[in-house]
Length: 388
Image 1: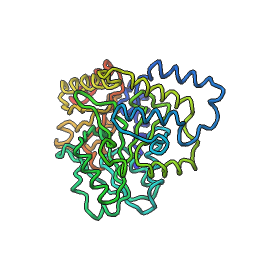
Image 2 (image 1 turned 30 degrees about the vertical axis):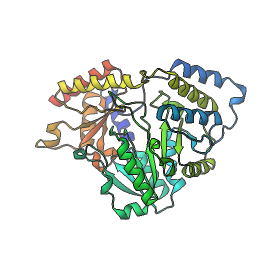
Image 3 (image 1 turned 180 degrees about the vertical axis):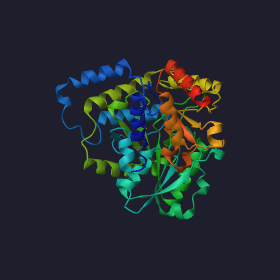
Image 4 (image 1 turned 90 degrees about the vertical axis):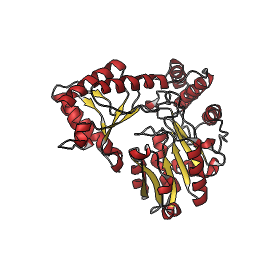
C-alpha cells in the first residue's frame, strides 16, 4: 500500500504528549472549521426525514448529479450529462482508490506523479497495476515534463493521473498544458485522470481550472471533485467523478458491487453547498481567503525565524524545503528525521516529504489547519528548534 507515515506520526504525537509537549498538529489536511449554517441545516432536516434511511444507490441521487453538473457549468463552463457523466463518491479518495480496479487489468501501467498523494500509489498496488513515476522537480517549478515520458510508456499506459493544484505541491497548470496533455492522451489512447480536490482554494489572482474545459476532453478525461476542502465537509465523505462516460460507467459498475452509495442526507447537504456556492457574488471566494491569510501569516512568521518558504498559489499546504543547515550543513538530515525531531522537541507536527515519493525528499508538508494565533505559536516553537 505504500507509506505508513501517518501512523508513524500518530505515534510521534503520543510520544511528544507523554513528554509534556502541547501538540500543534499541522500534519493532516483536515479543515478545522465546519460547513456553513445553511449546509448544516439542510443536513439536519434531511436526517429527520422518514425516507432518508433506505439504501441510497451507488450512482448518487439524480438530484445530486444534476446539481453537480449545474455547478460544473456555473464554475467552469463545462456541460455534462448528469445521468452518464457524473458519479457520486464517498469522498474523492473513494474514487481514487478504486478507479484503477475499474479501468485497468493486473499488469497494466499507469503514470502517476512523484511526489504525489499516497493513495495514488496505494490504489495501483491494490489493482496490481505498475506505476511509472513522473518526477516533479524543483528546477522545473514542480511541473511535470510530458516530453520526458517515453513513447513506450505512453503505449503501455492505461491512464495518467495528475493533480493541479496539487497535494503536496500547489502546482498550477494552465490551459496550454492541459491542451498538450489531452492531445497526447488521444494520440496514445490513454485516459487522463485529474484530481481537482482543491478547486476552490486558489489564492491571489489564481483560480484553478478544470481539465474538462479543454475541447474534446470528455473523449479521454475524467476529473475528481471533493466537498471536503471546498465546503469544510471532510467528515461527510462525499465527492463526485465527472467526465468520460465510459470511465464513469466502469467505476459505477465496480462500486455497484462493493457499496450502496452516499447517505442521502449527506447528498442533500452537498446539494445545498453547491447551490450556496452558485448564489455567491463573483468576488466571494468561499474558503480561499481563510487559507490565503493563514499562508501569509505562517510564511512571514517562519521567514522571521530564518526559514524561507515559497508562498503557494493554492491549497491548504506549504511545501517547505528543509532549512539550509539541515540540508547542506556538515550533517545532512532527511525529511523524516527533521519531522520527527521537530515534533518531539516542539510539539509541532508536519509530514516528511519522503512520504509522498522519492522526489519529496528534502521537503516537509505543513498544513494550514489551525487559527492564525496557533500558527504564530508554531512558528515561534519552530524558530527555537532551528536555533538549537
